[in-house]
Image (tube, rainbow, N blue to C red; front, side):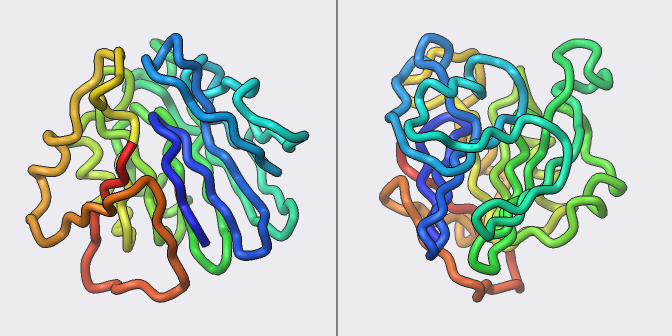
Length: 214
């Protein structure tokens, strides 16, 4: 399977069958840079904010998943879990949907704009995670240290950070450095592009942080 970072919290996930899932499409007016228009079979929406639900950026006639449940579409297994966008059980920013996506035998978890403290019950509900897509920029989501706690408890094979301040971003969020400095240098891999491919084989001895380019 192939993962392409489209910017912010949006990824294009492509299975070997050709099925495409796009997560959290965003509006340039909010993020500060344009999201490329992409075609998808399925779109997951973690919550209804313009930097996560800009469906006009998606071409084709995708199935939009913006509710809690379990789904099988075009051979792709997807489930969503209810969580909160803040540390006050949604009182400040509402709810957030976490999506787990199974493609080509790889278990991917997209945490959306999760803002609550990580709980063991949540980790148990997630199950096995090979690739964790996690916000690290703080302010509107968990920050770097809170994200590191999620990583330590979930213990994925691969972590791909998202929702942080890039060179072109206008958002009041932190840069990636705060998150990366919490890991040993040998755990960090710079992909050199916005795309990476995976198969079912992972080195389960340690978690790797893969930094995709935007």
